[in-house]
Image (cartoon, rainbow, N blue to C red; front, side, top):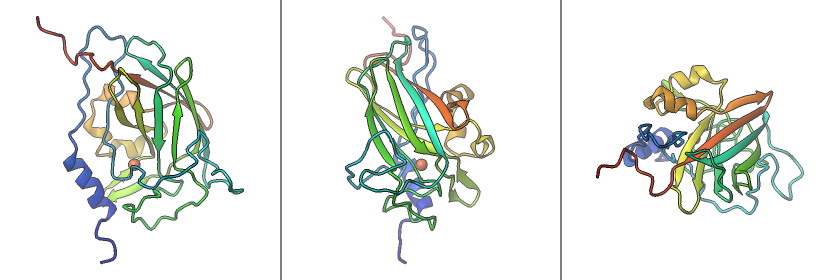
Length: 222
Ligand SMILES: [Fe+2]
């Protein structure tokens, strides 16, 4: 056997080995619910790369661009009161247009794209804003009856706030979302918070809400 770890096994291992993030919405003090967490998944980058800027469609020093539909994602990081969070570290990684990760555990036969950056890290700006220019990730199969809908993986960290690992979906992929084993474990309210808004063709917006590090999940008892 050439590849002892297939992608289905890899994802299952991750599911079993990771505590399921529980969405909590009963903090009556908060105006906005924190963005629901989701598993990191098996394809978090393990190979260092120099270029991790906001534009994933082109790798520095290469003349060709990534294959696929270019999409623009404008985001904002805020706290549960709606205040912008400046200088949060926003990390994003994703599959290419064919649904393949540039990761040794991804043994899919879908082609790699040597011109796709696949991974980016940017700080949020003064108003909490960030922007990625990327390509729409392809869907990929993880089991016979389970194809993951296109999604972006995120990790967001900021001193004083709870680190967040999550996954973001696109509003047009409703059919695949209905059968997604990860998204369907979430309450409906939580699912809505994990789906970006379409603002124009190829343009999306996404708000990330971080909980303060000392923010209680439930009303405190004296
Ligand atoms: Fe993924």
